Image (cartoon, rainbow over all chains, first blue to last red; front, side):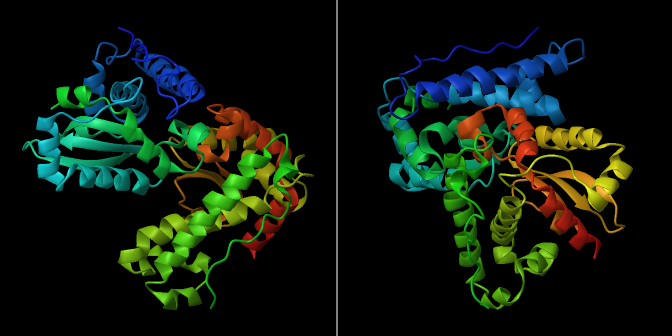
Length: 191
Length: 205
């Protein structure tokens, strides 16, 4: 069964002024779509043709992994964003973040530091470890924390293509403005 | 020894238009390259005796760099070396084909200039994420094509670079967006084969 490019869960201008319609057009319509198309090309007529995306993210290698994980990572990233801007995490989630990181502000700081510190292309994550603890981590290129048995709760794409049109080289500013558009209901649903 | 410095671009920001646009060159040199230089110096400040060593000698033997700054030197030292190398390899009057010893060596090693271009382009296109495509001379004096991730340099693998192409998205995104293939194609119009020939001669020596 062919993998499909999901529709964006918001309109093309709904993330402005954080991310422009032009960025979304390229990021979703070209980059995300290319990963879907490449994955379908690589899997058609092969034993992995009927594998779920999550199975491939957890077990595949090489080009299949890169494309499958990038399909998954991008779909997850879009769901982490809220059209019109986000609000704040609910009380229960905020308490868990404060418990894990000292305060909500300290959590954001740790996440931003992880995202800025990821050299090259990759992703910043908030994850729930197998033991239930929350942690901030980053992965390079297509890598995904599910490979290490963790459950992704929130991600921010720090490939340059995610922010270069709107922020140029200023990755730190992109991460700063990311917080205004986080879909905390989605984050909480991943717990 | 003084700290590492960002040299000015050897041409105007718009010199490589329309193949590489002025805004890209400005941000690439004044922001990205400048940050690598600043971060390299910041790392070396913790071990100032390393300012006595050339950047190439540090990159050629990363295991000799103290562990607490090794990754920073690899990333930022590599970024400084790679970009300095890259700017000199581009020219408003570039393009054409390599002549002389380098042209002969390319024909000998790869069969033809077109075949070399095809293999080098494939190296740049298949580098997943951020990185570089390279033509280098190996320890036996042979030309080899490779790619490196992020700011890793062939120098760290005992190779001597002759041609390098930055395929980080920041190198082309403003003008080419997701179309890396078009950017790699445009590179052949601005490559400075005279500089590549000098790199080749130096690598032989």
